[in-house]
Every structure is written in structure tokens, then in C-alpha cells.
Amino acid sequence: MKKPLVFVTRKCPEEKLKALKEVAEVEMWKKEDVSCPRKLLLEKAKEADALLTMLSDQVDEELLDIGENLRVIANLAVGFDNINVEYATRKNVIITNTPDVLTDTTADLTFSLILSAARRVIEAADYVKEGKWTSWSPLLLAGADVHHKKIGIVGMGKIGQAVAKRAKGFDMNILYHNRSRDTDAENQLQATYTSFDELLKESDFVVCMTPLTNETKNMFHAESFNKMKPSAIFINTSRGGTVVEEDLVKALKEGVIAGAGLDVFEKEPIDSKHPLLMLPNAVALPHIGSATLETRHAMIDCCVQNLISVLSGKPPITPLNKITAS
Ligand code: DGY
Image (cartoon, rainbow, N blue to C red; front, side, top):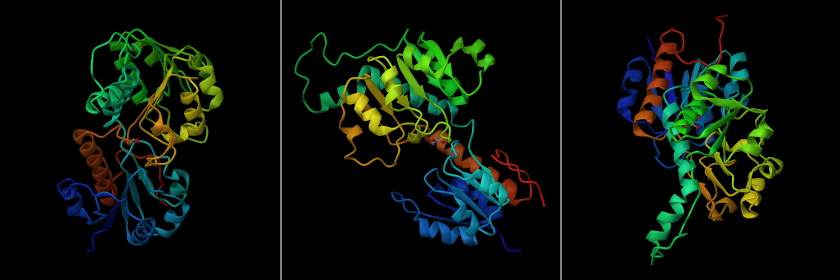
């Protein structure tokens, strides 16, 4: 019997796909530095039974209409704002993501952005490399303390909680805002629930951990930055679409807030001439929240296990939608 066809939209290590190859014909876009062109993705979606997609692939109505044979799409990310899950459900296509395996890794990166932005780590390392370090002086590259400060976490999901756990180790006072209160998290982490406005007003570090949805799109804008302390540092490791970047640039330039640590942007990859990259008080990273070898391998494994399961007639392991057999 002919094996089902799986198209993988980005180069993954061959050995990680070995098990998948036992149940499916696997084709993969193999160029290291370029994403699979949309035209090719649509062509492959037309033939394939399953896709292993990246957060940079748009799984929209056009793709789902073309993909008449598609049974499952495994997205290599926990976030799924690149996928029209509702339409996929209507089309009977199972969508899966990669929860849990990246929680701690993403929280580590979030915390490293907090530390880097507050202690001016990147700026200081550049200072040494550029030969500017000629003497020690009392206020040279002096930043802000992180320990014993107030952190405000917007989005207290699993990653938000993992960030709070780290903050606790730094003796931070933890505020959070979420769609709904999580009393378990409050008890375990000694976190205090506040309104969004209160969190903006009170926090030394405002950390955006919320998924990108219609409700959270552009939730950080000029007015939000105006409500923050002038010494506040804004951190974003969720999705760039939660922020009006133009307003953030203005806030950073005009001293409305003190700094930012960003792993995600409205448009990725960010243009190297983008005004955010010209600011000394903004640390920018190329969306590497979950980028450790261990975690990226675990994420690929999670996608592969989901694909194998569905293609073998079993239920998906980490589904985002529920398909009822017709
Ligand atoms: C995710 O999984 O959504 C991250 O942004 C990618 O690491």
C-alpha cells in the first residue's frame, strides 16, 4: 500500500525523522537559510496527507482549501497564531502544537532578556569588543537591579508561571494579569493578580507572555507605555503582534520607559535598519525563545509522534482541535 506523504517545511535533522519515514514518504525543504517559498508550500499541500510546519508558515484558508488530502498538520511551536485552527476544524484537518517541552527553555530565555536589558549585558560586551574599555569608573555601564524588584507577568500560562518561578528565586515581588485568575499559581508562586492597568503602573519589569489572539493584538501601545514607570523595562518573548512597535520605539527614545528586551517582532525577520535596532536601550534577539538543541529536538519529536499517531489511525497526542469522524 502507498505510504502517506508528509511535507516538512524546514530542514530538520534526518535522524529525527527516521520513525516517521517508517510510516510515511517524507519530503523536506532542505535549504538552511531560506524558508520554503509559499508557492512550493501550496504545491506540496495539494499532494500531501500531512505537513510539519513552522510558525513562519501561514496555514490559512487558501492552503487548507488546496490541501484536499490533508489529515494532520503538526506545527513546530507552542504558539499557533499562524494557523486558522477554526477553518482547519471545518476542513477536518487535525492541528497539533508542541506544548510543555519548551516551557522551561523559553522561561530561561525570558529571564536572560530581563537580566540582559537591566544589566546592559549586550551593550557592555560590545563596549569591551569595540575597545572602548579604558578604565574602571563608578557608574560605567551601571544598570538596574533585578532582585527584589516587581515583575508584572501578562499571561500566566505555563511559560508565564515558569518565569514567575525564576523570579521567585530572585526575591522578586510577582504581579500577574491573565484572562482568568489562577489561584493555584497564586498560592504556589505567591503571585498577586492585578488589573492590566495596575500591573503596568506598578511593575519594574513588564513581561508579555500572552499568546497572540484578536484580543491581545496591539495590547501594548502608547497609552500602555505611558502608564509604566519611567524606569520600567518591557520584555516580550510571546509574539510581536501584541505590541505597536512604533509606539514602543517612541517610548524608548523619549525615556517614557527605560528599556526593552525583545525576542519577537511584528514582522520577522526584523529589518536590520528597523529603528528598534538603533536604540542602545533595546536588546533584540531573533526569536530564539525555545532554541536549545535539547528543546528543539524535543519539539521535532513531539511533531513526529503526532504525525505518526494520526497517520496510523490513532488520536493525536497534543491536538489543538477536535475532529469528529464523519
Ligand atoms: C513557540 O513555540 O511558539 C515559540 O515562539 C517558538 O519557540
